[in-house]
Length: 93
Image 1 (tube, rainbow, N blue to C red):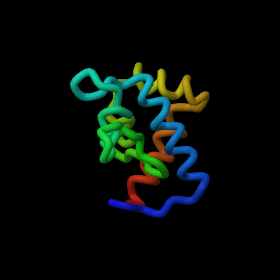
Image 2: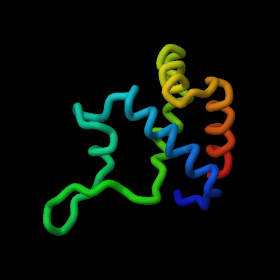
Image 3: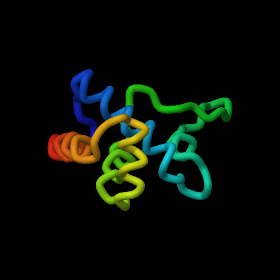
Image 4: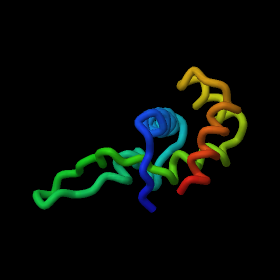
């Protein structure tokens, strides 16, 4: 699903995504970024641009409290604030 975000929402969700990539391990041992990358016509992997991985961001809500705290520490925010913002964004899409 594609949802239009404000610049503030986009920036916040990208920060969550960035922090989550440092705490959550990707599928098959790949980094989450590499797992979601697409292959170009000349067989190079290229990261997505202007895209928030909602699956990864929403996964924050199901992390164990210890990992939630790790993400919050990376973001320098309270767990409750992060949860509230993610839940609000999830309702929009």
